Length: 282
Image 1 (tube, helix red, strand yellow):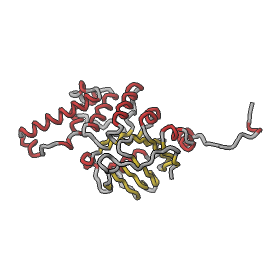
Image 2: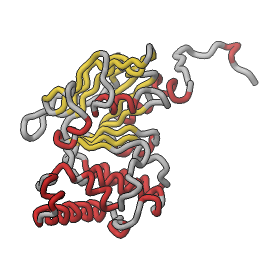
Image 3: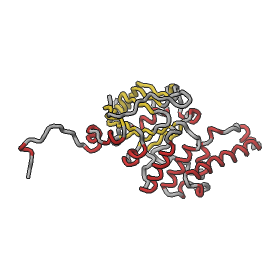
Image 4: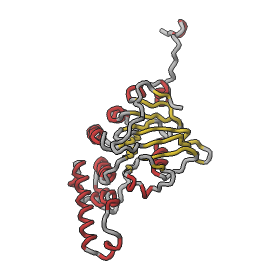
């Protein structure tokens, strides 16, 4: 079981409409005998920003893949707003109010930035496939509406000027913004961010942090990230994984000082014993 750091927020609140947030209970995942996750549990309350951290191979992305239905756990349960996610499929996520970014960019190389973002808004499409195939005016109006939503999302992230550019023509940091716009355009209730700061410079990372904090209270955010400065500045609470097991959870500052976390990241083993007289060396 994870170490519960003093001051951890109690997970008893409910959302404004009475439904609850994300509930992860006892998730265990094995791949060919290798334990990727072992009895991992986590609550994310509506409007919270919660971080999941840990060394490489700790099981962070596997946890995301379980939530999204890409990986089926051998044990445990995931619930979102009171609904079991056991039978949910990845293509149903948008309809459930869930968006996700990937570790990489994940943009479609043959689509412009705006068209990539329009893909994220497709869940709100009102005209059916038949209208589009027949070229009916309703389909044209719907395409225009989705493009407007995409341009608004790009504008919110300060990159509307790249709307007609292909991803390959954009610097990495701008591609990251386009990918985030694609996730946000669907107006998700749960946003899963998988290493959103990877490859970003200090200025872009600072702006990303402001954007994530701006979502707090409106969107439930689960964040996997290696950059501790970002995690400490944006997260309400943090869960630490090591070799697939929860080793600590609580407020960022408390988790950062936890001996088990220091050992996992730095190999620093806490020794509470006072030094022996013969231990000192000149």
